[in-house]
Length: 166
Image (cartoon, rainbow, N blue to C red; front, top):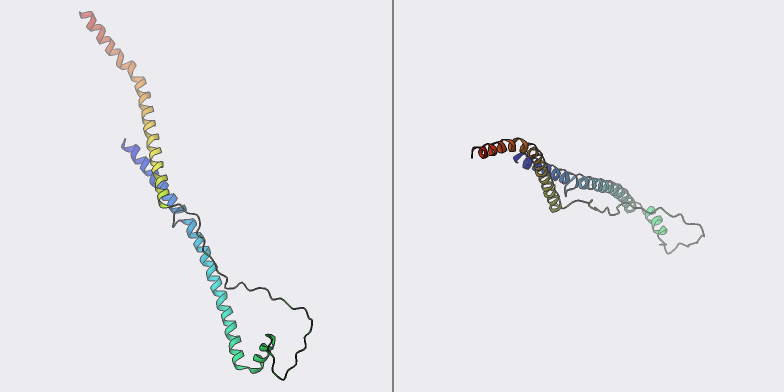
């Protein structure tokens, strides 16, 4: 009886540990997904730092060089009062869109709630307990099937002897 309860308990604890370790709220799957998202965020931060350094250099250059400021102003459509604009119909070169700094969303991976893991472990314990009891009853009945022949013969003989005495 104790052996059955201990075995069922061991299997229930093993199922609980495996489910918690793999599919739990802090399990391997969720941790792997979080690690993947963290890596993407770190790469994004590195790209933003590089872009910030480039813009910082450009800002410093625009603040110190008047000719560069004028050229940049002209590219934005600003002209000086003494300048004349000639529009040319040249195809514009589209710059590829920059996706640096795009939000990296963390979407947690599927995980089992703690209550679900406990219920599954409880059902596992009950199943193994019932299986152990069924096995024990089956083996007990099998042994009982062999005993009656041995037990009943002496009782019959005793009854026959008692009957012959009277």
